[in-house]
Length: 336
Ligand SMILES: NC(=O)c1ccc[n+]([C@@H]2O[C@H](COP(=O)([O-])OP(=O)(O)OC[C@H]3O[C@@H](n4cnc5c(N)ncnc54)[C@H](OP(=O)(O)O)[C@@H]3O)[C@@H](O)[C@H]2O)c1
Image 1: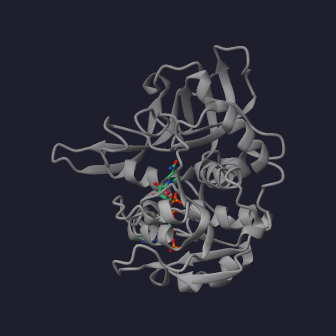
Image 2: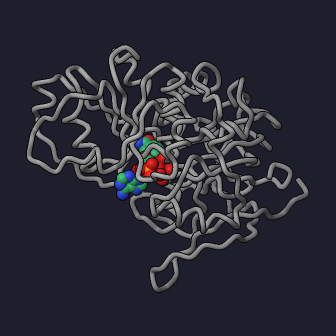
Image 3: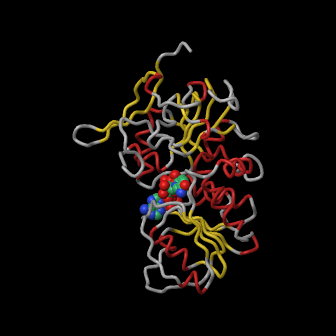
């Protein structure tokens, strides 16, 4: 390889314990040890990346750091036979972008067991429009289906619906024939949510209950909750008999105040979702669905594409709850 340095979006901790970001050139020696060297074509921005880029210690403890929990690209060099130079691959989760330098740089070097081949039916670009958000939405939907919730079971609630996980969950559920009620704080994006297949839109406020009632009218057959806090608590007590709630996010708060009544009187099931340590077999199975029968019809409409220099503005936006759809990061000039 003739190239000696490559660009990364570097987060640095200052002596005053502040965090600054800058696009800088790094040498290959700066990469962590790993079996597979990958030239990243695309990454994507997830809420967690914004936390990492602003020094959240629950995500990243070691600085300087390159965030990016998602990366898709081509193998440059591999120490294992299952991946060969020029193979198209994706890496999402595990420690990527947390304390291992991630996809906000033109190259990553990772253990082989984090790497999976690009599923047939997806381009590298499409795989990162999905990214961790797509895998997370798929895990929620799979859990709900495994618990017997079908389109005929009743209405389905998706919270944080214009966000990354939310917009993909709305799209996939609608494609699978579910009647999806999308909850959003962005009144200007009702048409966007309808275009993804939402059958009805409610405001964030409409799905907040601040009474002490342990149960509300049982409306939802299933819930994909990306918000947490009182939104999740309200969703649990608004879920119908035998319904299923998946909890994957905390943009609205990490605390959950509830009673046991929804669980013991209605048999409501609350399922925690984790995409980070999701076992490889399960990933492969869900990604093959995302590449085929679960692939959102308008995947491209969900993405806006930026480069590394445009990331600070997007990070600020996602932290303020202003993100809509998916932010794709193009690392190769030809891909922009
Ligand atoms: N468990 C896992 O493996 C996993 C994987 C991926 C993501 N996550 C988590 O899932 C959540 C969503 O991630 P994301 O990448 O999709 O983020 P995102 O794109 O920022 O989406 C979050 C959406 O939530 C809504 N929202 C934001 N702040 C809110 C608030 N204070 N109260 C209520 N709603 C609010 C907004 O949508 P509206 O304006 O439409 O309401 C926002 O667009 C995050 O907490 C993230 O950490 C977890």
